[in-house]
Length: 218
Image 1 (cartoon, rainbow, N blue to C red):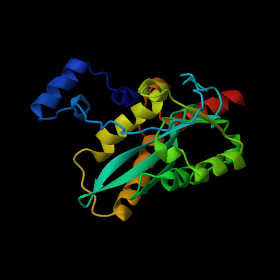
Image 2: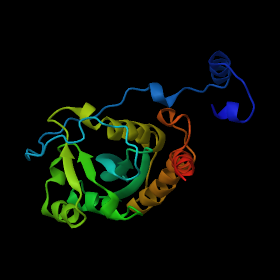
Image 3: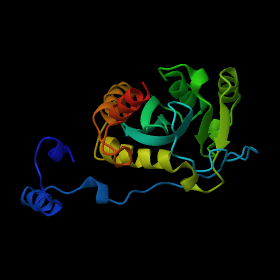
Image 4: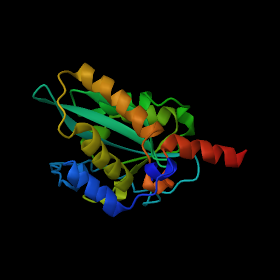
């Protein structure tokens, strides 16, 4: 699709041949290991999102999740917040602990009025069962939605985003410090939002998709 935008019409077969000739292998074909959670949040909060992943308004429904990154031979963690409207990563944080503070920092990094967010959907990680998170969401009147226990499909967009994140950002990388991770995470999020094309958005970047939608609305 990017070649087509530049005026080149090239078949998949030709691209595959050129890749073979240059010793290039797609990183997306590599199976990835995901550890199972040992415990989960048993809070009686329903799945209000109910897999309605196509949203027509910006920043009304967001999803979030956390993952681990190896930094100087120790585990560090990253939290991302994704807007379902255009798959844009609108909030992110990195830190040494998989806890409520990391989630709180990701929410606090969102560069928009948090009162616009109507619903936050996550899985049932115990780091989300915390007074700090509850108070922050209550302050901005953000409702909660939780996936059903043991059902990753209920948070499919967050899962898909992290699959890309692990393949494109983490795989075969070494970070010497949390400062390096945070700095390069910022650059990756900018690239993901402004440059990387997404099939679900008609092969536009999240920012391109948002601007086109805004222009249609005017």
